[in-house]
Image (cartoon, rainbow, N blue to C red):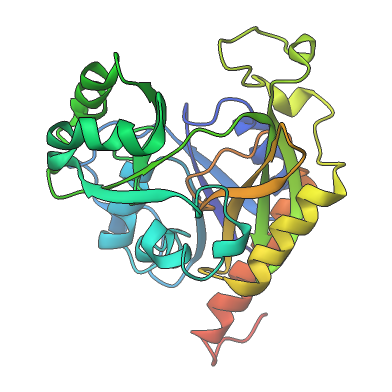
Length: 295
């Protein structure tokens, strides 16, 4: 039985082609789709209903596929499990933002500006409770608060959307780890404020662009250990990701967790990731197709 990886084009340019090649190298199928018209596609014509498919691309297409296809596993995107309110209570000791945070509806943020900054100081960090990226997490100052809230709502954020508010922690580095069936498979550095000379293309927040071409596999045992400890206590899906940060004080904490199908892989070891995710997909497929005989 072979697995098909459906890769959406122009979403994760860093490693789109490398991922395609690695899937083929391991003897499975890879398709790249340039998908721009969400409402004009008959998904039933893409693959057979009982094909084993792994999607990798945008949340927009991923959620559409979840609603309209029977594919297994299809999309690794367990929306409820990636809400902060789902995993914060479970891995609280490992979280960067757990000791001092609030949750408020997006529609209430402006009215509570004074109280927010009185509690958190002259800078705050905000992000959606949801893991669906309704807006990008950001640092706001008191002077730039209204502009930042307006920017966050650019995509018509629901006023009822819960928003996490916390103090700002000075960070040195951030890593992304891939978890498969509760085990950390691979990790990659993706931000490094301590050594901006590593950058191929300078950016304001030192995001390591084109990171697949750099030697960025995680070599920090402490970051790796925190990722595995979190996975030991919380396992929201067969395949998912976790971001770990190191603070200026030398403390390692979890930033957030996220779905595998819609997460950048940066410099992760694609050979290990493809092998592990493909095997997990096959196991899940066979569990739901118990009478399947591999000819």
